[in-house]
Length: 123
Ligand code: HEC
Image (cartoon, rainbow, N blue to C red; front, side, top):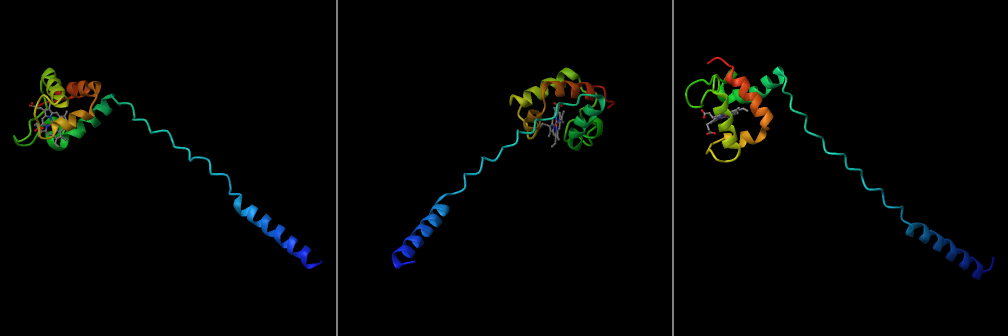
């Protein structure tokens, strides 16, 4: 092999090498974004409503019987009054320290079920 040929061979080898480097792997397919997790449907069975009502117990007491007078009790509350208050909290029509936020977390159906539950509790 003469000098010229070995130079040409080296050049071809180099070019092929560059070509291999220049040929980037195809961009990875976009990562599939999982579908958002749907909210669970409201559980309005008697047990489900008890669980909902348990969210209120920390402040309004077990079964709506609050200890002391700082936070109003919910047990035996008139259902219509109860629903009107929650609606007013949710819509920002009744001023509140916490209930305007809490009320936003409940649908009309959940509030109605809570109203049935608390109005039926003994004071
Ligand atoms: C972090 C404490 C807290 C939790 C939890 C809470 N409440 Fe209240 N609730 C209050 C306070 C305090 C008030 C008085 C209004 C205010 O300042 O927000 C109130 C007022 C109310 C009133 C009006 C009572 C009246 O006599 O006019 C209703 C109805 C009510 N809450 C329902 C609920 C229900 C139903 C839940 C559960 C889904 C709940 N609350 C959870 C603290 C709480």
